[in-house]
Image 1 (cartoon, rainbow, N blue to C red):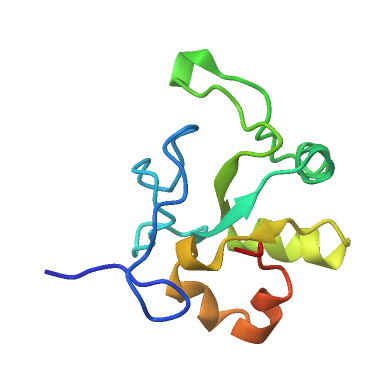
Image 2: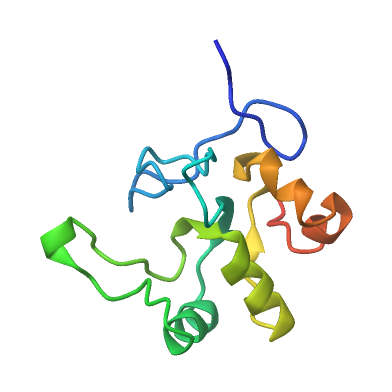
Length: 122
């Protein structure tokens, strides 16, 4: 059976089940052909990043109970789309990344050494 891999070519680790995250809402930053936005980066949400994200139209912090979404809070882990990470990087607002929980597919767009510069220290 196919096992999703992280950027170290090892089994992809859980990002978060509270809040439930991932394109497939399974807690993993998994990717597939139907995941057009590549929600592959497991990030550590901060006040600064959440404010920035809301400002650019990607409001992650406002709860939407009708969809069972409690909102992302500072300190939460979240699977972020690649494009939103790149945009945040360009504006100096990129969050830290949990590399063990970040899908290997992101390496098609960004070098591992660059990602390591945003890594949360274990």
